[in-house]
Image (cartoon, rainbow, N blue to C red; front, side, top):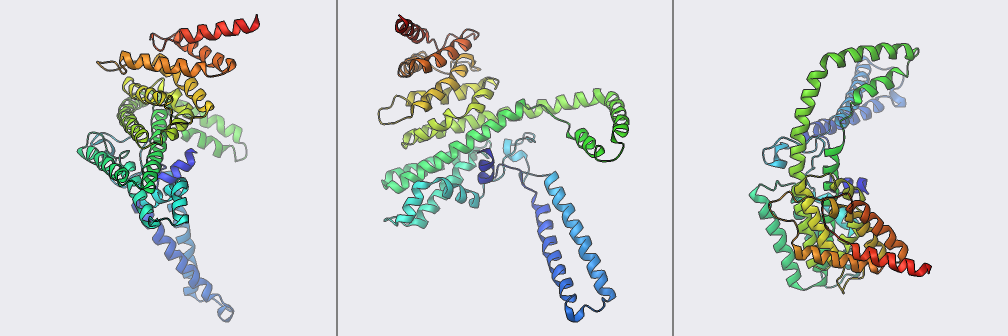
Length: 424
């Protein structure tokens, strides 16, 4: 899933424009040389090579070697943005482990064609709406929503882009054609998937320890030669001496860099949660919140990382979760029971442990009471065994947290009483 998202939306690092242009020009040149050498080696010219043929063949071999070296450099030193990395955060330092590639129209078209089954139905059935026009509208809206993840929240263009996306979706809904409503829903569902995946990567990069891949690479190389055990011991001894000599310098440098990177990542994570909350509200407005509920019920990695996120990021994730819990009681939605079960198990710990991080509560007293009522209603609809899992999970987190919310004591007492009566 993560690999598909990276492929569709360009989230993986891609080589820089300069290296890519050199690589492609070298490919063309070596291909022409190969054809030329092959032509000179045909039967009628195969008796004896001239000096120029030998030189041309050697140049071709060296060019192919240079081509391999360029390919190696492109894989070893990728660059996710051809422009300055400061573009992401509006002048802040770059986020090396977490950068977004610019959104391409071809990637948006591929993502839309792979995910928009409803639009495929429109195109294949050839209804009143022109298929090419629907596809163009979908690509445009998907591209605009993707830009929200790339533009820094401090930029005035961020609000401009959000207002543009909002107006496009309102105009589509006002038009009244069901194909345009599908355009809104599909583009928003893609945006929810992409933004939640980027948020997960951003939070994960904050907690991932730095690893020195150089030493393991050297040891793997040494192990391939004879008498590797003797050589490896000397290499380890030399490495230990260097590490001891420069440990104080490395420690200070790493701490300084990590502090700056973590600060940038927190800003990025906070922006992504705000975008995700906005997209979730729009999905509810245009009648496709069921897609967000399903995706949120499978976001186990994001739910785990949110427990250690910064307070402001936690607050936004709590708002998203509370909003989706409120949508579970809608009468016009048919939600699978397993989706409800996973939502309760995954996100109850965050409700118990999340801190505010604001001068005001994340949720009002009325909202908290409403969410408790919804959770109690949902739990009562499950079989006794599922209730046991949910309530035991809640109690383990609620008992060790400093928060008094959510208090599911009534649901727990009801389950315990019913279970005891079934035994009697």
